[in-house]
Image (cartoon, rainbow, N blue to C red; front, top):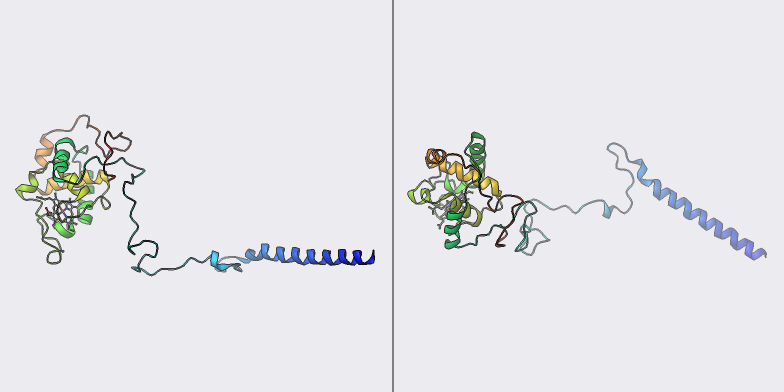
Length: 222
Ligand code: HEC
C-alpha cells in the first residue's frame, strides 16, 4: 500500500516536471518583439540555407536555372501549335494575324520589350549592331528587305522558337508582348503606315496566344 502511494507520488512529480517543461517550450517564442526574434527552438527549421549570388544551383543537374519539363503548358496560355522548322515558320507567317493595333501604348510596350530582349544583339534601330557585336556572330539586320518581307506571324515564330543561331526568346517575351514587339519592329522598318493603312482588324481571329482559346493541335508548349 505504502509503496504504491510512493509510486503514485513519483509519477505525479514526473508529470509536473513534464508539464512545466512543456509550458516553458510553448511560451518560449513569446519573447519575440520588435528586433528581438525571441528564443529559437530547433533553429534548423527556422533559418534557411543561404546561397551566394551566381553560385551553382544545387537543385538542378546542370547547376543552372530549373527549366519547366518538356511539354509543360503555362497555366495562363495554350500550346503554340507550330514546330521549330523553316516550314513551320512559313506556316505561322501565313496563318497568324497580329491581334494588336499599333496604338501609342502598344508601341511603347513593344519598344520596352525590344530594348530589354532584342536590343543587345540587334541594336536600338534593329540594324544588327547591338553591344554584343564582336562577342557573338553578327546578328541579322531587322531593317533589311529580307526581314521586312517576313509576315508578322513569322516574326512571332522567330521570337518564339528562334532562328538559326538566334535562340528562342519565348521565356523573355510573353506571347502578347511578342505581337507588340512585332508592331514596334514594323515601326523601325518604316512599315507602320502600311500596317495602319490596312485598317483595324475588325474581329481578330483567335490566335494560339489568346488565353482561353482551344488549341486544335497540341504542339510544342511554347
Ligand atoms: C543573342 C542575340 C540575339 C537576340 C537577343 C535576338 N536575336 Fe534575333 N537574331 C539573332 C541572329 C544571330 C539572327 C540571325 C539568325 C540566323 O538566321 O542564323 C537573328 C535573326 C532574327 C530575325 C530574322 C531576320 C532575317 O532577316 O532572317 C528576326 C525577325 C529577329 N532575329 C528578331 C528578334 C527579336 C524580335 C528579338 C527580341 C525578342 C531578337 N531577335 C533577339 C540574334 C539575336
